[in-house]
Structures are given as structure tokens and as C-alpha cells.
Amino acid sequence: MSATVAPSAIVNMENEVVATPDVLNIVVWGESGEGKSTLINLLLGQEVAATGKNPAGVTKDLRSYDVMIGGRLVRLWDLPGAGDKDVPAYRTMEMLGAVFADRPVGGLLLLSSNPERMPLGAQLVAQMWDMSFSGMDKWASVVLVGTKSDKYDEDDPVADVNNFKGPVLAEFNKTVDGDIQKVCTCNRDDVSEVKSMIELLHTENGMGEYQQQDPSRIAAMMCDLNGLPDGEAREAEMAKIIEQINADRNELQGAIDRLREGAQASGMASNEGHAAEEENRRREMDAVVDAMREQHRQEVERLEGLILEQARRQAEPPQQAQPQQQAPAFGFCIQLGPLKISI
Image (cartoon, rainbow, N blue to C red):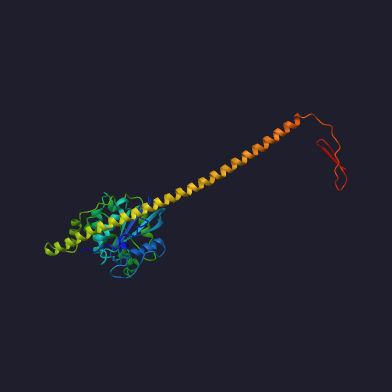
């Protein structure tokens, strides 16, 4: 029976269901222990991705981390290592396909800590990548990254760097029938070359659209890489891989559908709450306006009363002024019309 994909192994995508515009998606991949998570931490300048020396691999799911590089938002995707005992590379590729079905992939950083060769896991990744993406110039968006360059030959580290950037690159292209031109090295103290390569990826066309492959083709490639000849053992292994791929695809699609439904429901609830809030604000504003209108009406009535009273007084015949005596504490007051004199 096929093993299921644990929710955490599907992808850390509660906030990744909908593609984010203007983000350069960069996948960081290679064999377990090549320094994928360490490189991501160095690029971000903080410890965000789990690292360690577990031979089975530390990263078990797909996680993304955002960082500004070259004035653009870059989303770095940390994957289980190719060759991870718990998450085989073809299952990781299925997870990638689910994530990138509706978003562009800007590039791939393919890692190796060995300055003498690219490991088998990197070969597997490159071939699966070539098979799954449609871009005509997709190799322009692939970068070979030599990690842990501080551990190269102490007597002549420059020779190891040159070997990795020259003969190793050429041999790898020949093996995977690729045309990779971008290559760099890095270590814990210096990731400047990697940043420069990511800035170059800004100018490329990316990997193209993801194309889901027939499970039998993936299974055949896996068996070829493992050196399985035709026969019962190969057929059994292919059947196992095909069954696993089909099970993964069904579970991944179901998980994504549930996440999207949840996001839509959350959005609807948010919209309903926003509408209620707007309605309350509208009612409060209407009440304020009504109060202002009532105040204005009362003021108009008061002014109209004053005008009528003034008109009435003006229409009355003038009267002879009579002395009016008051008894202020300091004397008395005589009032003649509007003129008042206090003595």
C-alpha cells in the first residue's frame, strides 16, 4: 500500500495557495547534506531554515522564505534533499508541480559540496527538471552552486574552484544533455557570488510552464539512474513508483483544494465582516448628518423669529421715551431708546 504524504510534507503553503505577483521564485535543491538550508539562512541573514547532519535529510517538506535581492522580492524554496530516505526526489517533484502549477519558476540553484563532481542526486534533479518544464531556454535559469568552498583543498583552493566552474560544469552538462552556463561557489562567510547569480536570474525568462509527466516515464528514469536492467525487479520497482506517484497526486490535489476552499471561505467571511463594518460606519454618518440637519433647521427657525420680531417692532409707531429708574448699587440708570447712561 502506498504511503501517504503527511500534511507537513505537502508544502508549507497556507499562505502560498495563491500566487504572489512580482516575486522571483527560486528553488534550492541538491542531495541531502549539501547545504541547502544553510545557504538559505545565509541569504536571509538569519536562522529560519532547519539545518543539521541527519544522513536521512533534515528538511522533509517544501518551505518558502522571502528576501530582497537586487531590489526585487525573491522567494527561496527549500526542498527535501534528492536522495532523502523519507521523501524520494520524484515525490518532491510532485509537490513542486502542485505548487508551481499556477505560478512561474524563476530559477533553480543546484548544489554540490564536492568540487570534483556533481553527485547522482543533482543529475536526477536536472533530468527531472528538464522533463517537467517547457521553457526553450530553461537552462539559462539554472545555476550550479559549489557549497562549502572553505573546505576545498587547503593547499590550492583556487584550483578546486576553477575545477568546479570548468571541467565539472562541462561534464555535468554532457551527462544531463544540458546547457548550464551559470556557476558559482560559496561558503558560510561569503555568499556574494550566489546573490550575483540570483540578480542575473532576474533578467532570464525562467523555467517555463510546469508539465506533469506520465508516471511511467518518471519511473523508467528512476530505474535507469539506479541501474536496474529489464526484468522482474525493474517491473516491480516501476509499479511501486507509479502507484506512489498516483497516490501522491490525488492526495496533493485534495490538500490543495481544501486549502483553497479554506482561503476562499476566509476571504468571504472577511468580506462579510468588512461589509458589516461599512454598514455601521454608514449608519453613524447618517446619524451625524441628521443631527446637523436638525440643528440647522432649529437655527433657521430662530433667525426667522428674530427677523419677524424686528419687522414687527419697526412697524410700531415710535413712543416717547420715559425715564426708567433702576437701583444699581452705585446710583441710577436713565435709558433713552437704545442709549443707556449710568450715573
